[in-house]
Image 1: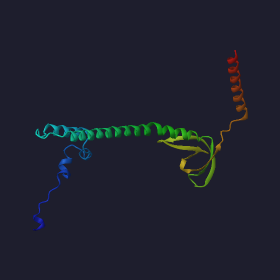
Image 2: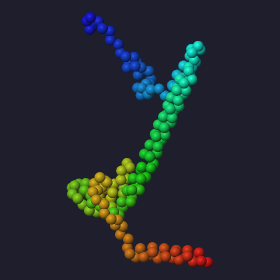
Image 3: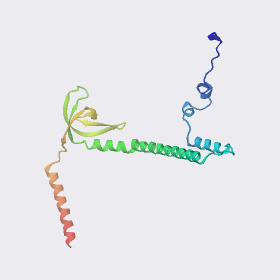
Image 4: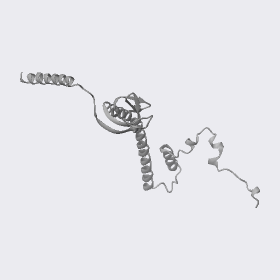
Length: 181
């Protein structure tokens, strides 16, 4: 047989007409859901042979499959909600909290222009598109450029610390007098 005599046809589910019917390829390939499963089960029950109806074990097995499918769908939905919650609320808050805790720390970092190792104190944090940039000596440094963390160097004066301590002692004394009276 000559190959020119062979009639070539496309597979129906790959035919362009199917995709141009208004459904996207994602909708076509999504598979059966729990509603489809329930429709199939009801159709099977409706058109079963009255002489040999669906046996109890088969029906229970199908219902168990339906229940498992529904639980997996609910679990998937819960995971999607959890993921959205983490990505939109919790993770950005944690990044901000950890970045702010870096303020006042002495660090060793690679200078973004020269690449040389430098030492400085983080004076602030700037956020752009959720990414923290540490302000060190009027330079914006990303966390991947920091190679070493030092101690917190806040620079409180001894006089300020003495004032805070005196206020705390007054509060403690007033509380202890209030308890005795």
